[in-house]
Image (cartoon, rainbow, N blue to C red; front, side, top):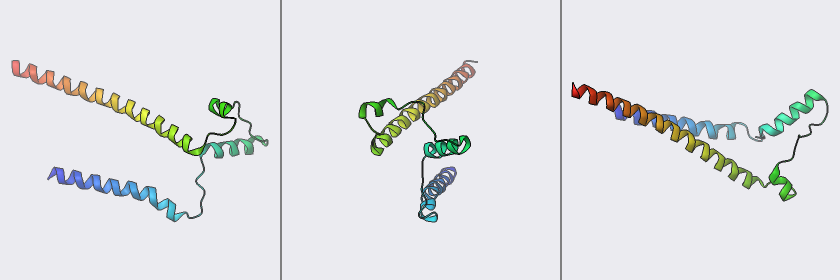
Length: 113
């Protein structure tokens, strides 16, 4: 009985996640989904009253003599995300195994007595 409720809970959560991704696209037709960099620079310009000037130019853009194509930016972001998720999963896995090992030691001590 417990496995069925877990499966239905997972299914409901997946449906909610998909709806959270799709509904804004249809509910806000014609809206621009800009990045936080653009909004941040606009806010700084609004507060200071002058045009925002970055402190430095990204290293890759200096070598390319222009902006990085959007597809490459997305690729680099996805690679960065994948590396971060891998590190988090590794750490969580280590904690899980450590807890599992400690529980096994406690069980072994109980059996010895």
